Length: 220
Image (cartoon, rainbow, N blue to C red; front, side, top):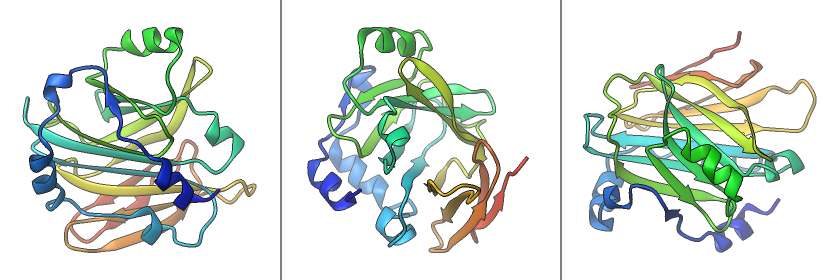
């Protein structure tokens, strides 16, 4: 799949829950400068497969500004079929973000809303999501995240419990269609390090420690 073409088609996500918690773009620019950057092109340059990039950072205290960034680059029929990505804060499994990749059906909207997510976004073209919000439940006791995918009204794990420094992290996953090839995970920290490993666990999960990019597969 041509990722460059996808970037040209990307439109800003529409936030349809808690719109009052979205802060001004000036604050977003200031916050961007304090986060590690693990660009999809730099992390998996020249490699084929579906790519998932997750970045987060900010104040994890209750009601304080926190930025969450989710980039999804599908490169298979299964990945293209994903209707939404649900990001949970762990270990309490609190649904922080429901990110629809297509305009949701009424049943999907009702199902996701019944799970009481902190925020819901819809993106008109599959690709990037940049969310800056004040999460009412806070992230101060969180040790990482997990992600589930919604396909035709059914939820299934995409990323298992992945441990990261919630105050500032950047991690990416690369999935290929090659049998028994596992998946590649890359970790980046504010000190400029970047570390990548090939893992085999199902569902995919990892530990990304900062500083120094202490990366471990959490293979069961």
